[in-house]
Each structure stands twice: as structure tokens, then as C-alpha cells.
Length: 249
Image (cartoon, rainbow, N blue to C red; front, side, top):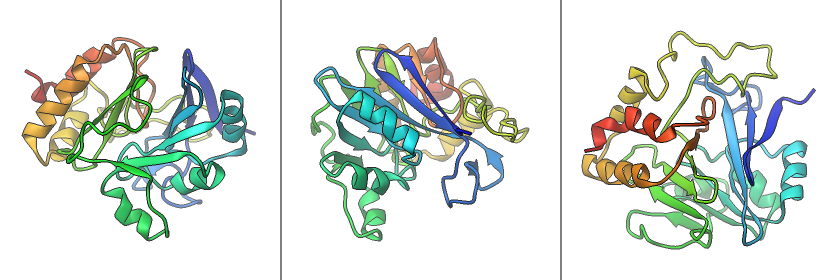
């Protein structure tokens, strides 16, 4: 039985949601092996041709099949400095694709014997990677996890790794016998105190956080696809403001 939910959440925007491992092949996709958070990759079929993918889950046969239907994979992206464990699977399968992630990742990739093709860096915030006509990005250099937010203009969809969470991860656990509910993480939602506390604890540069949170808020998005928890299908800007209000004027 399949353990992955693949669906088109908006025209040309596909999600790959599962309750799966992030640390080892044996460990369910849980925070510290204890709390259910789920995992999700997001692929976008570009109008100019090719596929862009935020790769946070394993490259399964089902994932390969759907990507093949969408087109040639041209961009493989890491959402932050922690969502990177499956990048090499994608790069090995799609060697001509451009792999991109936050600058801190190359130190980790060196241990695997390879390097990213390009990085998101505070030194070059306006560097173009080739997909910007369709997908904008904002690198959160002041956030400890070094997250990157993305905005697909055509579908008005924002995408991120740990910048927003929306527990419980019901879709991600929908094919699992395990429960997606966690009392300890029940408030890890855009309107919950735990997410606001998490964001504050990850603050390394408040001025940079204000700058980047404001940039994302200025995007005209209605939907937000997080890596952890259910997709925020509507009113996503209000969700962003609820979680990031400390950094918005």
C-alpha cells in the first residue's frame, strides 16, 4: 500500500505528503522521534518548461513517476539547512538539474562528497537562479534554520520548510496507522503560541527577520504549503501575520 499522498493543490503545483523518515530509514517522520510532524515535498511545473521541486521527502517510485509526467526536473531546492537529507537522491536521479540551498548546507554536503550548484546567501540576496520569473524567493538569513520562503506567482502559493507549521499533520498521516495528534505540539499552528515561541527562539538577527517577514507578507499569496502539517488552503496571509506578527509593523 502506498504511504504517500500526491495531489495537485493548485494548477501546476503538486504536493508529496507522507509520514516518513527524516533521520534514519527506520524512524517515522517525527520530531526527535517522538512528536508527529510529517513531511512534504512540493513540485511546480514551470510555464517556461521543466519542473522545480522543494525536495524534503524520499524520491520514491511514485514520486519519480509523477515528476516524469510533469516534465524534466530542472531545479532541486532545499527549504532550509535541515531539510537536505534526500537531496543527493534527487541529484543522482536528475544529474542535469540545478541543486540550490542555503549557504550553510555545503559544509554538510562536503561530508557526502558533493556540493550544491548554487546557494541562497545573505551576501548575494538578489542572485538569480533561473526560476525567478515564476517563483520568487526570500532567504531568512536571521533565522537559525536558514529557511527560504518561495512564492509561485501564478497560483498565489507560498511555500516554506519550518517558517510556518500547521499541526496536526492529518494529510501526511492519512495512510498511516499512527495518529497525527500530539498534545505537546497541539499549538504548533499559525495561531498557536508554540509556533510563535519557536520563531522567537530561532531569531538570530531581529532586523533581518523583520526585513524578510515583511517581504513575504507583501507577496500576494492566498495559500501556504508547509513541510510540516496540513496545507493552509486559504487566508494564508492572515496565518502568516498571526505567526510572524512580532516582526511585522
